[in-house]
Image (cartoon, rainbow, N blue to C red; front, side, top):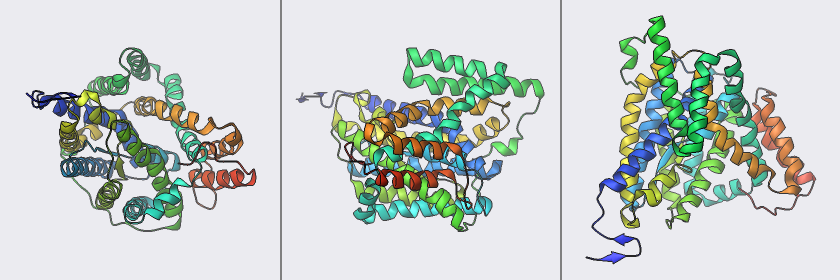
Length: 401
């Protein structure tokens, strides 16, 4: 029997990479479901539109994972833009309402496709100083990470179980801390609905897609489309390629961007905000948990995609249940889901001592939530941060995005 440095080829059951793919999808989905739902609602989506958006983004990222993994025989997994969803929460509704938000989602997808077609655009994104990009993300995430504390004070009985389980699992099994918190939140919601008798209508549990004709407004382009594109590139696509490289996989940049960008464009009219290369969850399908034989880990990428599609179909029912949650529960799950990303962004923002002042200014502006000329704080944080960075003549000792 042929052997390799990774073990016996052919003896390893397909169930190993397939099971890793299922775990990858479950962890990725449950860890950010509440964040994505809250982001769509903040943009002005009604319950039906939000459910449609979750279904659309789940199916498109699942399809992208299957296509890329099958075509290139690598465990290339796609995911929804969790930092992008956090950005939507902090930005809130824009001029033009939900149709304008959908238009911004579509434009972001076009930007992603163009990045695949034109390497110069990716190079331009990479020229953004890393401390500035990370500080912007940290500022966007701060209010969301504070929300569980506020919710605990206002609704301790509903929120405390979620936070306690998350904290315990963070010590024992960190990978499952957020999914476990999500399960507890669902149990809290079930108990609440049982007591109130306000169960969702059966019609709201049926999977469906709702078309929204996109509209374009300047506020949505500058306040949503551009920051969403930058956050998705800087916090998902570029790190996603880096994560894959640590396991010996060279992601085909152009096809990956074109597939995920096209998926974002297709999902936008149905409410999907953006899909991209997976970053944190990518390790679950590309790492040792997917089996010793690296040549077969692409199976994990395919099963991840199939699992996302199945979860997407189920997401309509989950959406209806979560939207009926007691006050504070969704905020608690969303907040703990983003703590890790917030910590990483803070570390990246403040790692270079010479760039700390521009990064701090960027962070403060982004966290302020201020809207100027109808444009949200994330955009102005980038502008002000880059201006201060250039004025102070900071050397790029830590590189760029």
